[in-house]
Image (tube, rainbow, N blue to C red; front, side):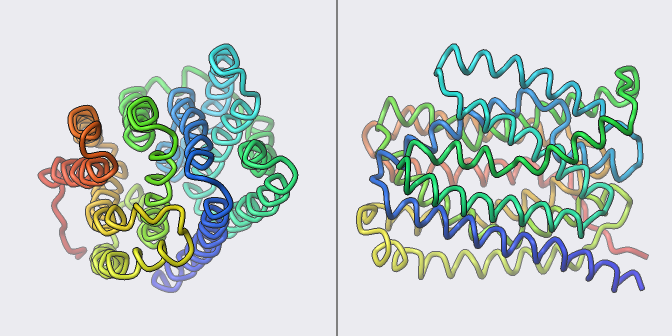
Length: 377
C-alpha cells in the first residue's frame, strides 16, 4: 500500500515536472533561437536580479516550507506575511536602482511561487501541485510567445511575471484561514535562519556570476552561457522531481534509499548523453551560439555532482541539520568567483564552464562527510 502511495505521488510530481520542464525548455530554446546572444543575455541578467532579490525577501524558502508543512506546524501564513512585506521593500529598491517595473512583478511572482509550491509539497497535496505547476508553465509559454511577438525581447520578463498569477489564490486562502503569529517561529528560528542563509547563497551561486560576467565579458557571453545552462537544467529534470518527493519524506523519516541510488545512475547516463548529443543540438538549432559547443561538453558533467548535492541536501534538510549546507554554498561561490575574476578575462567562456563545474564538485564534496546511507529495517 505504501509503495502504491509513493508511486502515485511520484506520478503526480513527475508527470507535472516532466511536462512542465519540457514546455519551459522548448520555450527558452525557441526564445534563444529568435534573439541574439546579447538580447538573450540581457533577459537573464534581469531575471537574475529578481531571483537574487527573492532569496533575501523569502524568510522561509521552499525547503523550509516543505519541512514545516510536512510537520504540520502551521507557520505558513506567518511566512507569507513576512515575505510579502520584505518583497514590497525590495520592490522600491529595484525601482530606484533599475526602474524596471517588470522585474518587480517577477519578484512578486517568484515569492508567491516558492512559498505556495513548498506548502503544497509539504502537505503532500501532489495533485494540486501538479495542477498549479502545469498551469504556470503553460502560461509561461503562451504569454511568453504572445509578448515576444508584440513586444520583442522587452516583453519576456513581464510575461514570466504574469504566469505566476494563480499562486495568489493559495497565498490568499492561507493568510485568510490561518492566524499570523510572529512569535510562533521563535522555537525554530535557528533552523529558519540557516535555511534562509542557504537559500541566499544558493541563489547567489546560481545567479551572482551573471553580475560579474556582464562587465567583464558582456551580455553576449552571458547569453551563450545561459543557453548552455538551460541544457543542464533540462538534464536535471529527473533529479529535481526526486528531490521534491524525497524532501517531504525525509522530513517524515522515510529515506527512500533505493530511489536515490537509481537517481544517481540515471544522472550519469544523462550526463553522457548530454556530452554526446548536446553539441549536435546546438549546431543544428542554434547556429548563432555555435561557440558554446565545447562549453556544453564540459558542463554536461555538472548533472552528476548536482544530483549528489540534491540527495545529500534532502537528507540534511529533512533532519533540520543544515550547517554543512551553508558552508558548502559559501565555499562553492568563493571558488566560482575566484575563477571568474582570475581566468575569464583571458580564457573567456571556457573558463566559465570549468569554473562552474569545479564549484559544483566542491559543493558536493563539502556535503559528503555528513551523509551516511543506512538501509531501512
